Amino acid sequence: QVQLAESGGGLVQAGGSLRLSCAFSGNTFSDHTMAWFRQAPGKEREFVSLITWNVRNIYYADSVKGRFTISRDDAKNTVYLQMDSLKPEDTAVYYCGARRYGGRTYTETMYNYWGQGTLVNVSS
Image (cartoon, rainbow, N blue to C red; front, side):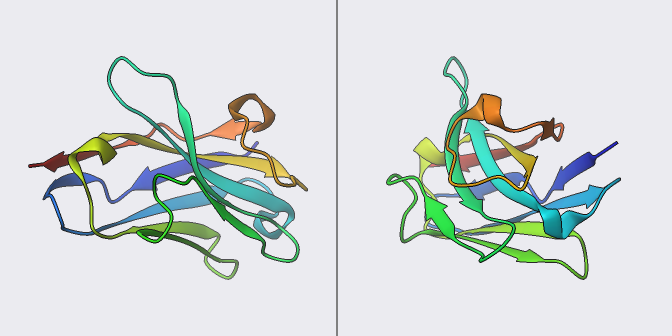
């Protein structure tokens, strides 16, 4: 059974940076497309970024393009989200999701496995 564990969240001032990590276990990491979603208070969970399992295609939501960078280390079974130039509107619980042999999908329900989330709080 796949298990995901996010870490790296915290409190940061606007303009600052954080690096989130998501550790994967229980299956073959390199077979899985990995994505980051976030959920702000009172809002639905929304897509942030994904990196595919095969040719390493990468996609970002328009709201984070140019500020966030997703990467993966298959040797460490970990996906990362480097977040720079953070804004108060980036405040949310950030979740990583996994889908085996997943393609370019921004839909939350298409991901089979989820972590417990890590809170990012950006102060103005």
